Image 1 (cartoon, rainbow, N blue to C red):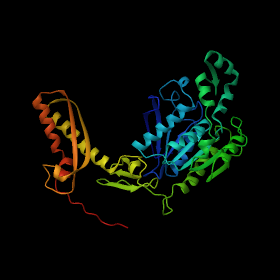
Image 2: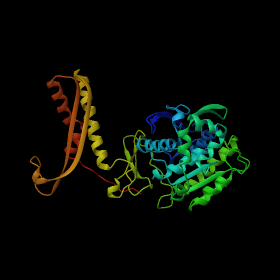
Image 3: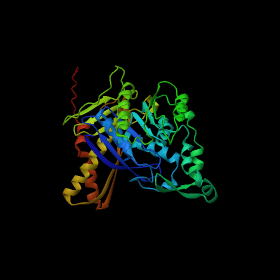
Image 4: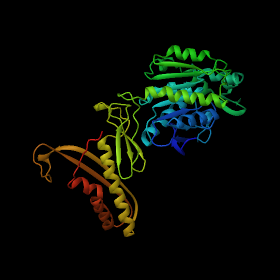
Length: 410
């Protein structure tokens, strides 16, 4: 069982709120994995739950979510297609990058496996891709409602029965899925690939695994799920998949020194920053209260742009401090402040162009802040709220005398 579970929503590609579940292990995760479920399934299907549990036991956090129109997610399933599934996967990875840590492992079951193969190129931090009972051609799923195809073609849509439940399939779904060919995506992965498939899979034949394996370049591996069914309904099969993924992925999460880069443990009153090993400049930031952020440099200077730059974070700290200080002051004074907004910019300017600067040669740092204050306020109240922002603690720290002491450890 995971040490902790968090349920939340995030905006999918179409704007619909998608229901997600994050299972975390004890301590700081070794890595984060993103799991894509099978066609018309949900994040809570048994195979997904058991695989996630096995991975958390191995120290890997797993995010599962319901595609648009399925499970607890908003939206209409009838308006979705394979392209929207791929876009939802990328949206999930983007959410992880912004709020947790970008996924180093992508896992897809059945059509979710095909979607993972199509989306992997848009998740640069992903190093290891695992597919389970995935079709080599996304259009394979249309065989499940082939008897309704004529009606769909004629009328534009039809209600079909899938896994005992009615779903409305539109012609746009057929047109979209038949336009997707995975061979080029697979050939250009440039990531480690692990293919799971059962030789007795009655839903997606074993020949699909052969086609995926043939299209992929090394490193690639195949694991036969002897006697397993398509949905991995036997607990032992799902547990086996989780164990193998955890052991296999470890090799591809290694840093330059050959060891998996473990993120620092959060310690109250400190902020720890450590390279993730997933990019030239990518760093994980762990606050004392356990919040996890990612920092990087933009692509223009050789980074992967997987997170805010150090100067972005500096401006964010200053802006947040100013906004919070204005809110606290307004509440204490009883002012009707509706909203405070701070927009900041950092530049290097020539010292001779700066009348307020003591430095007269070279360049100096300049931070410009534009503050917007809205609410039922008098001009005097607005001015006082504006002025108090200059006295926020972070502003005073970076404009006052700062002593930075460093100690070499280890």
